[in-house]
Length: 308
Image 1: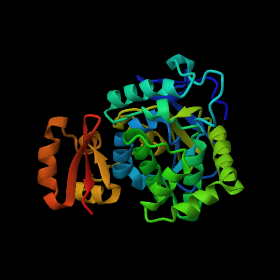
Image 2: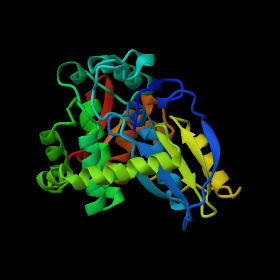
Image 3: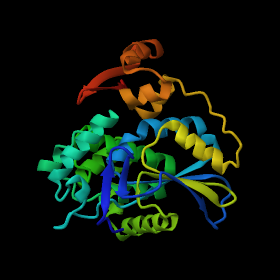
């Protein structure tokens, strides 16, 4: 994918081509058995990191209506001499640090970004290829978990996810064989799988990240670009359900959500359970046994992890 005209915009929450519509009606002619939610993204997309709280709640409460298919978009193949994102003054890796920090402060999903000055990510393709191999060898859910872990490593904990050793460690922490998976991702199959996603991205008409496309069995759907409030995605789902009003499931208990996710930031807890930032600590004390979690802090934001 060519990214010569990529921009990132705080107000729309889009990393991509300027002028994308927030929501538009689509009509595809490929048969689908049920509603598919295509999530077009990239491991180093800061606005994709920023929508994690809303996207998680949407999937948790409305996921019975659709199957999620995460698609790698190829945000950065490599750095070159020309501008990468001139609208945000990004011409070289070091220029990314301030932009990422701004997105993190705006969204309250913490982003350090200082590694882009002294140890920059050279390409988003290596972590994307690992995603595709995990997806192929295991399943979409495990691959989605990996995507979350690798973003935590990059954004919150300032690790270079284009480095093989970081990728191996991240995959190993999921009780998978990191060395074998990363090695396979470096083979031609890794790039082949990635290019299949790039083809799908073009066919879907997605030009920025994050893009969420929901398609129903009648081959019609909606495309939503950028970070939006929860109701925006619910309204989009209603359209592809042919006016049937989707009924949300109850939010999962915090204990079960933490057991699945292993790490949650304060903003994610606030969005999932409709509480204020000032209420998070008391909510944790009420919902969790003290021996089941630890409260930590990074970049001024609280997060919780499991103790095991």
